[in-house]
Image 1 (tube, helix red, strand yellow):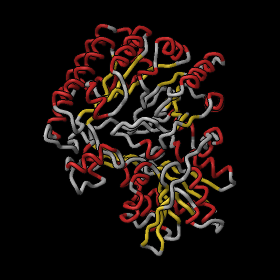
Image 2 (cartoon, one colour; image 1 turned 135 degrees about the vertical axis):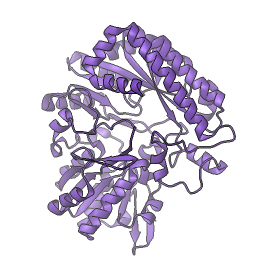
Image 3 (tube, one colour; image 1 turned 90 degrees about the vertical axis):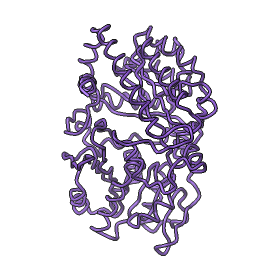
Image 4 (spheres, rainbow, N blue to C red; image 1 turned 180 degrees about the horizontal axis):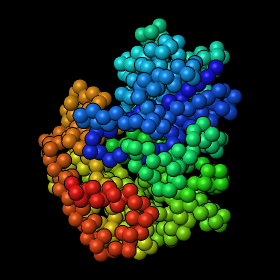
Length: 494
């Protein structure tokens, strides 16, 4: 029996930032579990490994064409196909991949996992007849059980954390699967199933470059916090679970020694939650003299980063630290976002990071129900002040009511979003010419977009002033990350 795991192509609207080709870690962990159980597994990254980009008048789809995916399926002849369904805005490409698979061989068992189907499993199956099973939550153990089901060793009713059809029309949702309690039991991702040199050195057209020989790594799962806009805890649980510091250090040493990795992007949602573990990781990098640079592109909590820890982080290889702020208005942060964060901690972090010469960035969101235009302006003013005083990068987003979040339920109950909101509306809202999805008595989508546009214009001016004041720093960035300079020049031209 052969199992083929597919990462589908992805679609981006013209004018949006080019995607970064990255390892399909979720599929690679599932593949490693299947390999350990002696199953024959192959992995097709149809997003990254495709050498073509298909343009329409509004969008660009990057990766293998669906005809090419079909050829790969015909050649590989899998019995089971597992397809990644990463985000609602990309789910259409997942569906098309399942359609191609069924056209080639209706007997292929098609399985889809990921955040989107976790949140709407029954609705997804009702609308997608070419998918047989969806996996809700973590995929490693359910996918292993599905392989055993295909061999006649288990029944579908025994498998936790899946939804499936019975008699082609009745959809059954099984009890949720238990989240992995000990992440150290997981093998390393199946690096052997992909061409690592392609990811470490690729210059495919359509992708933006990572730093030199960089990969992503996830060292923990689960989030105990309850931000209104986030659905991570629905997909990965609210209990924080983490690899031990020893496992993480061994993993880093392995990719450095085996693949010559020089930079790591920690994609954890809560990398610094367990401070003892995190400090042990930093200490290990220093003591073992592991020469890597590392960053936190998903963001960490500013209130977990004191001056002493920031010093240790820099010494261990930190190149940049990104934090999640969300709102610059403490009232909104407390009552609407429910972030449990004191903005004074953000200011203290920014001040300390600048003193140490650490590059920093912060994530902000505007357009929450309960906000007024004045509240949004407070967030913008806070972000620009941090840029002005401490050179903290501003990454401003407009609130999106993702399925399963309290934000979605609140908007739906109050009529702030369309009742018939379609899946592709999320993708359309993210295009440069698109508008946010939320309308309240206090603001329209056009209001939110106008505030964001003016904020970006002000931010560009501050960035230019900072470059003029610090030409040496600008040159350092140009040599270390030339893609950022090119992006900056393009933005100025706009």
